[in-house]
Amino acid sequence: MKNSYDIAIIGSGAVGSSIAYHLSETKQKDILVIDKGFPLAGTSGSTQAWVWVHPKTPSWYGELNMYSAELYPILEKKIGDVEYRRTGGIAPFFSESDRKDALKLAEAQAEAGINIDVLSRKEVLEKEPALSPNIAGATFSQLDGNVNPFRLVELYIKAAKKNDVTFSFYNRVHDIQKRKDTFTIHTEKGEFAAKQLILAGGPWTKELGNMINITIPVKQVRGQILVTEPLAPLLKHTIGGIRQANNGEILIGYSKEEVGYDRRTDLDVIHDTANMAVQYVPDLAKANVVRCFSGIRVMPEDGLPIIGNLPGLENAFIASMHSGITLSPIVGTLMSELIFDGETSIDIQNYDIQRFEKMKA
Image (cartoon, rainbow, N blue to C red):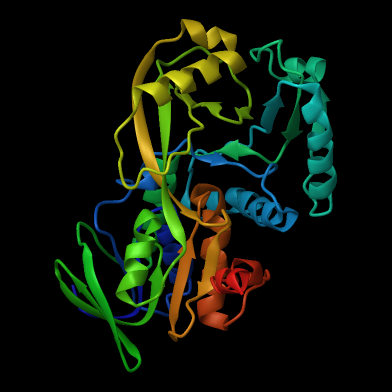
């Protein structure tokens, strides 16, 4: 492995591997991807992997998610079958008082081209008979779905390698220094030099930012997921908190806990999650849970992605966000445009890291 590259990407999850692949399509640059572990050892391998669009607000953020979801069928034609399924998404509510908020959501999202139906109880149960008759209604959009995250990241990396991207796994970054127009990245496997640097380290993004004296306002948020035994087809749609995988397993999870990088599961949260599942889908009371796991999300302080240049450091970029599975196709595309063209086809000003400084002013 050589030690000098045009671009170094730190992080090989759904976001980092997407950026590597999209940059590599032109074969104009020597690209290195460095990861402290192995692909899917982090967040991208411990997720329900929704491609979730319709409840994302503000509407301009929902629009970004919509564009990304629209890219998934194109992406599959280029890198292979990632088991993307546009199932449609249902977000149930249990009180008629929530219907007014649902109608406001539908009205706001329509301005961005996101079509949402606000369904009655009868309409929801016609679409998804397994849902509880106690629900009052739901929001529904055809845009939502899910994907196999293991296939997604595996195929991003495979396609990037075909385009001569170099990957260095099990290689923790200890320090990053900028000297003139070159970044020197100190790792467990030696030093690497790069003209451009992209931080896509997920939960470790804040630590990476500290190495280049930039405070990145993100936190680590744990989510715990239950997995049932394979069941006969039960759910047709992706439901807020629950989805059925191709093999029949049902993945259940909605928790958000700020506990640092702690991937242990917690019996109280597991109990609450199981209760939520039965409240939504009563037949799940008869299902056996075969395993539980947790994943650590990176969560910007305002919940919105951080995408673009890093201030005061030329040729340094960041892509840090929750919903990396949903957004990976569009973020890879936008970062490629930004690096090659200096501008993007979609305005990303709302995702600039400097917004946090303006909030303090």
